[in-house]
Amino acid sequence: MRQLLSLWLPRSAFGRFLWEKKSYSLSKDAIFPSRIRAKNPKLAQLLSPLGTSIRIPFLYARAMDTKQNYHMPEDEFRRWGHAIVDWIAEYQDRVPSMPVLAQVKPGEIRSRLPSAPPQKGESFQQVFEDFEKLILPGVTHWQSPNFFAFFPSNTSGPSILGELLSAGLGIQGMLWATSPACTELETHVLDWVAEMLSLPAAFRSGGTGGGVIQDSASSAVLCAILAARERVTQFHTNEAGCDGRLIAYTSPHAHSSVEKAVKIAGIGRRNLKLIEADANFEMRPQSLAEQIVQDRKSGLIPFFVSATLGTTSSNGFDPLEEIGEICREEKLWLHVDGAMCGTAGLCPEFAPLFKGLQFADSYCFNPHKWMFTNFDCDCFFVANRASLIKSLSILPEYLRNQATESGAVIDYRDWQVPLGRRFRALKLWFVIRHYGIEGLQFHIRRHVELAHQFATWVKNSNDFELMARAPLNLVCFRHRSGDDFNQKLMARLNQTGQIYLTHTLLNGTYVLRFCVGQTRTELEHVKGAWELICRTAVEIPN
Ligand code: PLP
Image 1 (cartoon, rainbow, N blue to C red):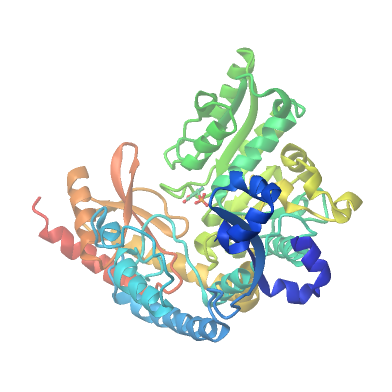
Image 2: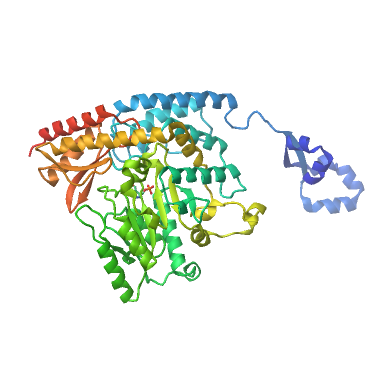
């Protein structure tokens, strides 16, 4: 019936109505009065099974209320859009005076939220007021210049605007065809990044390899392991699964994402061998070589090494040239994780730290850590894209398209685990264009200088000691009074809300980590932190 009506009414008019089915009950008497039925006994007999009433179905059209469509009206979106950008700008000014570490207890934020979702939509004014009142107190302010914890996750104006535009466009760039600019900008920007960091030519799209933006370094190492697994088994594992003989290697100081990737990839945690590190928390190549020989003798198949440039706990730099030689000789896939420190490759004076990258099969670093680009953004480079693509590519009918078939385009869905992908290249492009290489170098150098200043204060103090080399922006230190004292010191410092730092264990010893990498961290913040640390240490009973 609807189809018939749609033929009869112009299509545009048809779309403006809501078509509804109804039925009404009418008494038999109202339709066929008893005198008519009395005169027609056959009709009366026919109607008798229907009882006292007859249901009459019919279809009717109701004009659709186009004003009541529940969407946010354009003028309101505009008003709130401007207000929120203003809010973010003001937030950046007031964040230094906010408690860095959220001062709430577990469950406190949830307990303030309504237990059920609203049946009827609420005004955005109300929603935003609740964001400020209920959510903000539970936020740890990563963008505070007094944030010295973990590794940073810094942002910048151009990056936030890029992120906003990406949300506004709302595209999904799984294929070149689903948004050519998303793919081509990404390829182009990653070639720029490779050039900015002086990466080997193989990592550029014009050669055998190329770069892709992953959500995180964890995804990058997972993709590397998957490609390595397939390369060593001639793509047989994708078909038949793992047989438990593949062996991966890393150092005990590598990030936990390597272990996670090994588990996800079906290699098995027991098949990830931790190669001993030296006094600087850097992998010993000799031990790696010996372990590989031993494993081969046992009938195992060594296939993958993950080396780190800037370990999380101590900023150790694994000796890439020697590890690389071993991998090349033994035909092992070498993945290099430069998650935070990779950004330092922008400055020629730090280039010696990155020597040996020509041996890497894959390399990743996170602009979302130290390159003023909002989380998430990890640049992942491979020297030979064919292994990666062949490992991860699946082409169901519904994704087939002419561009893919022509072979002339990149479909980044084949370079990552998920199918869908955001337009992340936009924010990275904005950041690079806004700062230029010069601006980025300026800030990286400044952060390193500030961290070294902090390290000098520690070194010159009678109460504190340095616990690892500080080649870049991470200082590992501790008070000389032992583990308990340092734990108490860190807890007290973080409770003040004035600074936030985190800890690690180095050789079984509790160590405080102080990492300088926030966009707006200046000397006054680092000096203020050091003075607070010294003052607080004096207050703790020894
Ligand atoms: N690798 C290193 C050296 C890290 O320090 C980190 C996180 O801090 C990671 C990998 C994981 O980073 P992501 O959060 O991007 O997965």
